[in-house]
Amino acid sequence: MKKFRVAWTEQARIDLREIRKFIARDAPLTAKAYTARLRQDVKRRLSTSPNAGAIVAGSTSEALREIYFGNYRIIYRVRIKVEVITVYHSARLLRTDDLDRG
Image: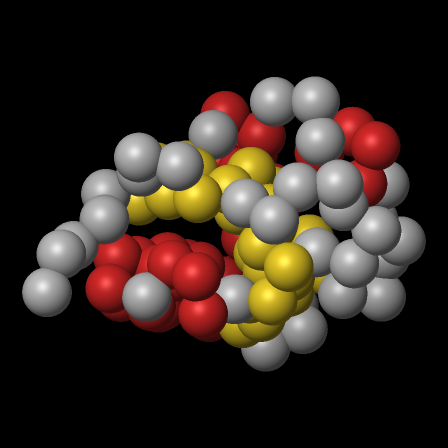
């Protein structure tokens, strides 16, 4: 079975740091573990089955997909590698016009 490389954009890394800071306000020890589990889960899932995620609703690209980890949406693009574009709380509205440009 082919394994895909999973890369995190600068924006996705910033998102993870912000998530960790937010969780750390109430649970400092949990924050680092949570974001580590998120990264591990995303890598495990996307390296073997990158097309298993749903196509992002409203996107003009079938390569733009999403999976969930808890309350967070992980938006990624499948090309030669899997590129995680952004990670954000699922209650937030997604602006797909910003995602389709890359």
